[in-house]
Amino acid sequence: MKTNRRKFLTSSLAAAGTLAFSSIFKSSYGKEAEEAFNRISLLPPGTAARDEDFWYWVQQSFTASPNVMNLNNGGVCPQPKVVQDAFETYNRISNEGPAYYMWQVVGEGREIVRKSLADLAGCSPEEIAIQRNTTEALETIIFGLDLKKGDEVVLTKQDYPNMINAWKQREKRDGIVLRWINLPQPIEDDDQIVKLYVDAFTSKTKIIEIMHMINWTGQILPAKKLAREAHKRGIEVLLDSAHTFAHIDFNIPDTECDYFGTSLHKWLYAPFGTGVLYVKKEKITKVWPLTAPSDPKSDNIRKFEAMGTRSFPAELAIGKAIDFHYMIGSKRKEERLRYLKNYWMERINEIPGAKFFTSFKPEYACGLGNFAIEGIDPADIQKDLFNKHKIYTITIKWENINGIRVTPNLYTTTRNLDTFVNAVKSIVKDKVS
Image (cartoon, rainbow, N blue to C red):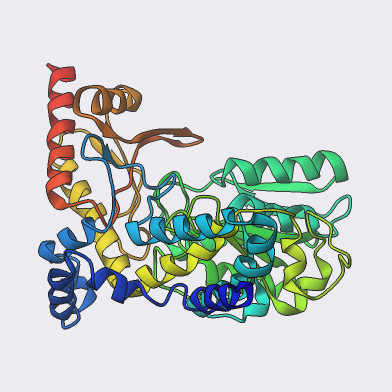
């Protein structure tokens, strides 16, 4: 009986992430979903981005609260219901007998998920380690590289605080030298961006960190161009892709980075506390893991997963999130997110004194946007948006940025954004009158 049960569960797990279509199309709104997909499949992604009937159906795939409009998806994104259901299923299985089912049955599904993630990322499964978030992935590299006193690292003042703090800890502990760049926001010139980095390079520079998309403003940086300039000088590249993976359409090798980290609970809509570390195969052996395996100098990517007990249900449900992503379509998703950002920014731009820290140009921004109104503290607008209109955004005050970050998602409709814009206009009118 146990053998049959295990065989059944294992075969079920092998299909994890492949049944999104069937499970969704058999639901109560399955017929409408199928019709929507048949129609949208004939449209170019840019045109599909404006098909509100289709995106209304996508909205129904989520369980977002009707009482609060969430425009802070840049922090963490919700999971569609099919992902929530998968997590709950794996969690129930695990709880039938944790020591057996988690390690002997459910845990075997990690290799299936690894392969699915590698396919999505466009790389080998032997270069993908499943982590809990971007911080864990990137700090594995930051603390795992053999850097010595005097070695230099180039990074920006707009980088994510956890990464900045990690590098500062190495600076205090090991005497490495941090060389800082301050990027204007927005910046719409690849040559200018590359020059700022290159001007910071010296013969002692060992690695640069690049934020593929700056979390404060949504600024996209030309990762490949920066990587090529670094590699010309024998400098390695660490790419922070917390906000670009499953947000914009690319493969990891396209960026030509050496190391890469992302959070899957952002734009892939995977369970909370899931992420990915990518390390080029030939560089795995040189990186020390954060948590020690039996052979820390191994060239096996799995050495970075020696963290003891973790959430197996969350890891396995990543497969269903990947399927949902494919179902929408990478490019279609990117174009919709960019369309939503431009939709609200163009309307906010009608307000006198509107200022943006985010570009309207497609090559420099996608779904995240940041704005301010001259003469009004952004924090006051953000507070009124929530207290008076139940619209949740976040105020960003960091280095040369002082504005409100607005991050819609696939479940956000243009009607929602009209409500948001009208709320901002009302708040501004009250404060200047």
